[in-house]
Amino acid sequence: MIILTGPCVLEDRDKVMKIAEMLKPLSEDKRVDFYFKASFDKANRTSLSSFRGPGLEEGLKLFQEVKEQFGYRLITDIHESYQAAPVGEVVDILQIPAFLCRQTDLLVAAAKTKCKVNIKKGQFLAANSMKHPVEKVLKTRGVDEVSFQASKDNGVWLCERGNTFGYGALVVDMKNLIAMREYAPVIFDATHSAQVPSTGETTGGNSAIVPSLARAAAAVGVDGFFFETHYDPSIALSDGPNMLQIDELYKTVNEIFAIKEALGYN
Image (cartoon, rainbow, N blue to C red; front, top):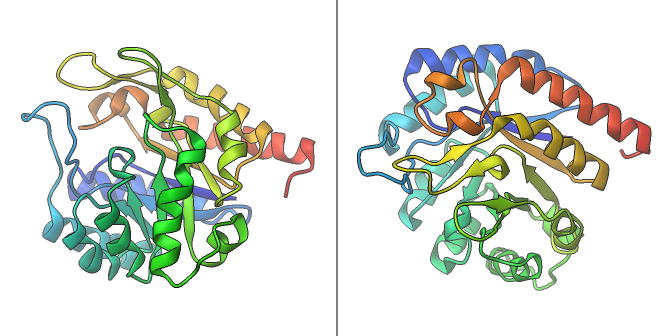
């Protein structure tokens, strides 16, 4: 099972390396297809004063150090087309942010790299609308068919992270997990699904519901999970309120595997 996990943003070297070290047992679990996740630039923070990250150049240096020290495969998000090529030389998966999932130039730039592409579903979109971003990536890679198998074979994934539900709220429609698997393997982003938008200068969240959402997605059946995690979410510089503490991450992953085993999922 695919697990994409790590801190929301590359904070400082010591914190990043500490989190990476604490995730080693998960990376060594034979049941897990592990990728270390973090952002080099949070370009869509609510407030101009919020911490964004080290930026492209310093971020790639830190990613390279994580890769060399731990042997991890890496995933990070890009926000502009010019970032795809240099970032794609270091990481293994390029993630398209939910707010940008319809941006054709960004999708095409990501598709032209050797990386897998994980497209997060916009909070404002229906599941069947995600056929079109998948098609943009596949056609750029010379594939005309849009299907689960075509996407699996050509490194295209979709990621569910909840839908806008009125003002300042998200809801997860588990039907989306089924519907999107018609087009691509599906990753469930359990931590961003627990966000509470529009709570002031930073986005709020309720990490207490993350394990429940993850268990529900495991019962429905998905190809993998996305979790942001930290050894102390209370000091995280981005998305702390919806992050899982690392011990809770391990507990949640074990619960997911118990559900998959009980239901006979591979």
